[in-house]
Length: 624
Image (cartoon, rainbow, N blue to C red; front, side, top):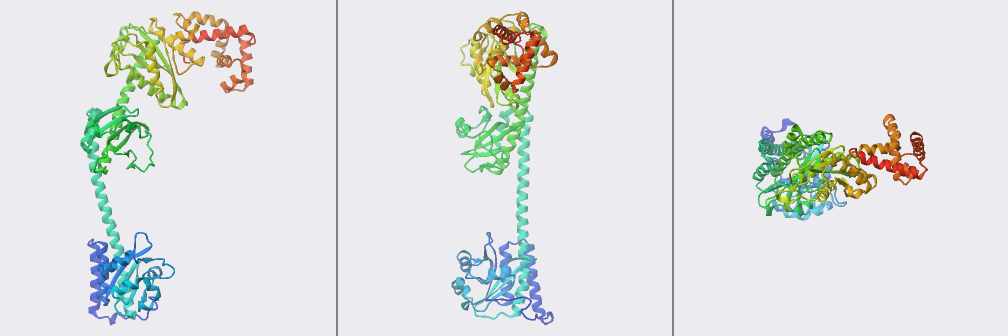
């Protein structure tokens, strides 16, 4: 086996010595290759033409074109002339040409590919390194071969192999002619690949264009339903028609918002609950953009609003699988559902604001009997002429950053609960707490009633509100206080409930329902109609301290509260206030000077504790 340098292969023949007929044949052969490439013929057809051209021009018995396989580790025959299909299949499957060899045997083709130089074998029977291919060569019937690299630019892209059935000394002329043809073949091979890739790209782009066009039409249909105020039901029916499947929409709590089609084909509550609400973009069953994911025999699409998962669409995957167009339709439906939920949320927020303004006006002293106030209440569905109890609730939230969203969700849940009662209770946020003015004769209606036609006790109503608030994600508990059973004005009922909540929280009672009866003397004092007497009594002891805090912006009264709640431990009070114990001591001395009292005297501690309790009761309208 010999490697032949194209520079040292011997003197090249002068072009003048070539006959016009031979030159014409070469030109026609090169033109045929160019035409084959430009006409868009397949790579296999182009390579077969290369092999057939080499065989016919140079008189070889067989020819083949070898290129790297997909792994890049082997050369395989991709085009041939004269070789049998059985030979090609056996070489490619059983005896592929290793580009790196196996340490003992190196095929002429791998040597030509790696060196970039022609490699000739006069008699394969006398070449030990050709042993692995000796059997198939004998069956095919060749005895000698010449392998020439296909060089495109600086890259070797394959080899052109030619075979004789007898032992043969390859001449310089044969090597030069085959090398020249190999150079043209390399250009044809590279061009054919580029044409093939371009055709694939064109097909892909056309497919994407068609998909985009159909996708835009789908989006337009879904959006048109939303703009016509078709609601979630209209969107779901349109989507079901587009994908030919039943569809279900659930909110973040798992409540079904809309559905269409046979229930048997849609996932049950247990199946839906088994899929975590927060989507994991890295999971392998995520499809496309990450909005759509497969879950068993069903497909779910996430609906997000302001970065929050607010709903999901469900539908069966179907026997024929889920196509790209189906997935695109589901993605568009997710966006349109998000817009519809945003519209509904905006309307809900407007209602919350209007109810909040109404509640503020009522609690700030506006007469509930006044005509303008009652007309506003009537438009919102509230009857202020009836006696109401007041319920005030407060959430326990792990972090302050979660508090606004947690209260917003809690407000929505309690408002949904109130909407099932007639006359409708007034629910809104007021001074950092959830407040509900609940008609004492309110009766639950509709499917939610389990109805007896009788008003529920306020304790049962308060328990329902507490459970709704505590179910909010991020909430660690909820405390709800309810006003006394005796009939009071709305403002008095609110003051009683707010005071009960403040006293309960300041005495360490939380995540419960609280009534004035649960608070002993404090509960009794809360029911007094005139709080001014309580403040006047408390001010006998603490007026100077309250005025000092108001005038100078200090926190002496709060420090005193925490000190008493800490069983007179300055160290524990400092920890709870996040202060140094010396700072707590300095504040306590300042209280003694300002109020002219002695905090080391037991009688003083009793008087101060009583005064703080009276302030808690009297200031029930202030945040805890």
